[in-house]
Image (cartoon, rainbow, N blue to C red; front, side, top):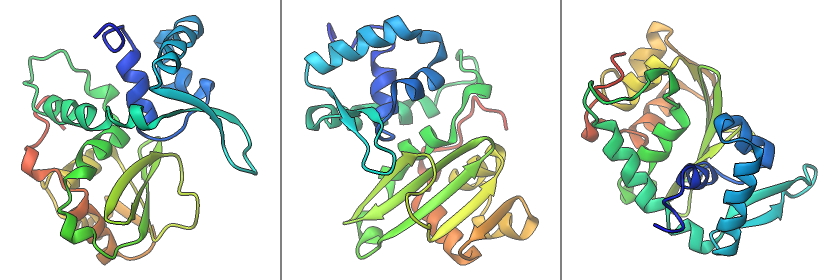
Amino acid sequence: MDLLGERWTMLIVRELCLGPKRFKDLLDVLPAIGPNRLTSRLRSLEAAGVVRRGTLPPPAGVAVYELTERGEGLRGPLIELGRWGLGLPPSAEVDPATTRADLIALSVSTLAPPEKLVGLKEIYELHVGTETFHVEIAEGRMWTKSGPAPVRPDLAVTCRLRTFLAVVFGRTRAIDAVESGDLTVTVGAGELAERAFDLLSGSDLGYPVYLGV
């Protein structure tokens, strides 16, 4: 707790679970932290071997921060905390306006039964409200990452946060959302959207009651 209990530290790790980030990227998603405190927290995490500085491959070639192997060890506990948070009661001090689809996907993407991932190598790109993120499936694992897919995705969809939550948490089927026009498939087919959201299902967790949407 001496290392991880400082304010903002676990939120920085959470963001890096979604992939490498530039200093500016971290400031954008954590605007209240301020550059000085962000610098201090990153230095502490680097010194502890949780975070390292790297460079994205060409053509980007920009400096980023990313989790080390030791830092990756925090992914499981963080995801469990995220799932716990989905069950908070309506009286809890949670602002639905700050709910992010990429973090929901990060929490539920590890719930897919391993047997459903065997032999799959696919990328899904999701545009939810103002967010863009992608989900990669390879070698029996599913990963949620920030930003657009690095290559042409097998599936790309656009929807509102309300629709995303309704499909992920089992209030409606993806194919029904496609037919109603609430979910637009821009790459791939509706049947693939149905499979993608089946793999992204968090229905066993129950609907996030604090959202009210």
